[in-house]
Length: 452
Image (cartoon, rainbow, N blue to C red; front, side, top):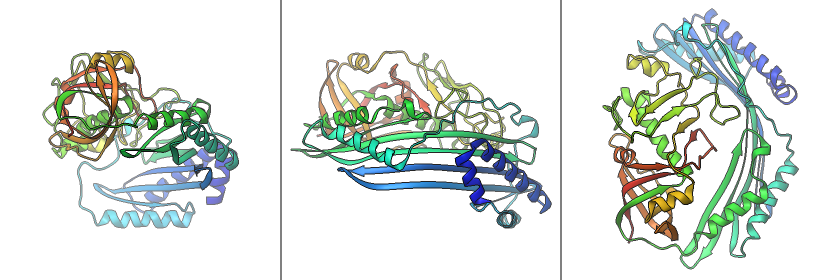
């Protein structure tokens, strides 16, 4: 059966989905036969190719065919989970038996169990997420070498740390005892380049990457290499800065991390554990009035799109922040029950979270900031989700009168996330689309920049 699934992935992806759905149905029937009161199954199978080169030499070529069945069983309010990569009937029966043994030895949890049957998704729109790439290992190596060569031609002081190409595609299926079985095909292609430049202040490293559902939407290898080289060369002449309280402009890809901290703080798990700095913030002003943070799960071809969540509920467009006010937690079925609230169909996370913009592109944001710090890299894990205290190492550029003056080094930025959200002056139109968080650059007033 395992070999059959792999061959179907290659020859007929729709047939693969049908076969996986049949295996899910078999697991659900077998779980019931073995005595489970309810069952849910999450299945994925992915195939792909990844290559890496360095200094003109091939370092890695990896072909992957991965699959896994995650089986969760319930004995009333007791839960047990087990997984297997073996699709044979015997392996599945053994995995179900193992999950049942776990469930029998766990304590009852009144919030556990499947989502209510009437909430299951009934219509699954085609979100156009599957665009396989007929890429051979030789072609992938050639693209990686082209990317690296284009980067190194920019300046003789540059050396390559790596250039990588990856192409992945697969199918995921979720099913449960309510009779819901949903499947989705998806693809994800990417390329990246990491470069090093030797400077009087020491070695500096920077990178760039491109990712999309469709290979023809990726940056060309040459453009990617040149962009990575430009970013690395821009670090030459980095200087420390004096400690000051100034505006900080987070480039869009770094601002996405701030959005991630927001979602972590309003996720049901953090709320019912009372481990979030926004615990008492529901229906209060946490951003300026112009800010809306909303989820757009049905965007065609977007990296974060999904028709159903990890509980089988239909995803939907919804706002978590409206006119700056916190309107909703991010809830799965389980966390919703813990909080005595309905699920927001976010088991497994959010899908295409979008932030409203009130400003233009990055140059216009620099002019708006005047004097301060442009952050293009963040380092360290100095974020306390309970208090909101924020302190991280940063790389980027000092800005004077709206113009980049010089790169910086040995810089720390500090503040509190609650205050940072309140002090958000601008969000740019330069939307970062290479992931699940869709936001432009953030201009935040009144942060402490620590340096020499």
